[in-house]
Length: 461
Ligand code: BES
Ligand code: ZN
Image (cartoon, rainbow, N blue to C red; front, side, top):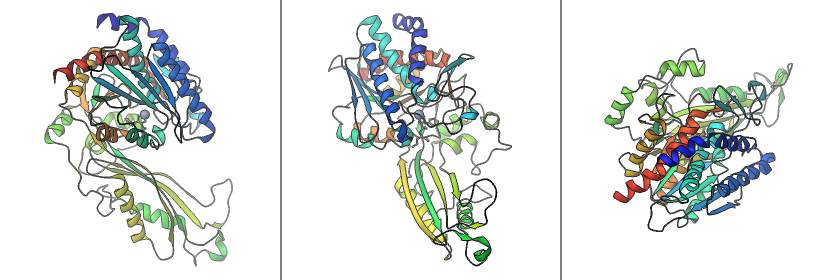
């Protein structure tokens, strides 16, 4: 592998330049006005695949944003790897909080600063550039690779589900490799062994049929913002942090004792979480330790809450409606549709007769996933990342979600292999997103080694 790894190192600047160009394109999937930019990002990526020597590259339209499918099939008898990633990015909530323009990448302190740097443009490029290094040096790949890079991950992968189900044959593979998660810490690389699922809902409480004068009606008509506040406050037990929705925890599969023991050996994350978040104290479900709360327990959050007058000055209005976005992170044993239904039932049950639940929407969902740790394709990833980083990775889970992963494993009947090169404090979804360029390079090296380790491991098995 020395020839390929030397090439990866020699191409460092060229690789960073490609990442910079990719990051300049504001491919914000949730913003309809950015659809042209999302398309441009897909085309840019297709160009990188072509320049890298990947044989068949297509930008496939969907009812939403396009899918980039790039295939390099060397030998029908060789193992096949499907690499998944996403080229769409999160929006910019508040430009003023960013030190530099989110779509004009800057390099400072060995990191590249831009929206999408770590999530997921920088991470997904590691696999593309690994293929390029192999092809440049050796003229061929030691396996068959199919890259499936979507543009809707950050909005729930709406059109990818159908695509995967309808293209089973074309996507057939021996494993699915993904880099869209984080290392355990800057010093400790990791292989991700679990993701939480998600159920995302939005609802509106109505009292009166239109806004009223709070002097004429206040005191005689209920207030939907207050009703909403009570309902939301009632979703969790204050003492224990447990979710109070009936049946919420039914059927949950606990982590194994072996996993719990391994997690207990990891350096405690508590001080780091305090520092990263700026909270005065940590919070969570008792009696679980922080890692278990994030990795193996479900959670419920209010993502947004609104209603009534929020402009400058004052307005004595008694609003007609108040709304909230509530999402829940799920663990194995829970299903997104079922949990969303249970939340709706809870709201109806506790709604006072002075208000109505005018609207309840199940916006999107994704299933949880756990790795097949003993699978040779997963074990090969530990070896590849060790070679790429010069350090042994640890198995660790993530609290976040990649909705398509479980569907991939079920539909394609192949294990998912998650090697994350990001860090949790790299500002994903927030201001000042960045990606450590040392980890970018080590990521390309790891991906290049995986192209070598994976086919050997699964051919032996
Ligand atoms: N890269 C993340 C997944 C992730 C989150 C990994 C946190 C590690 C830690 C992914 O792009 C993401 O943000 N997914 C969304 C999915 C949702 C919109 C359905 C998430 O988890 O919020
Ligand atoms: Zn991501």
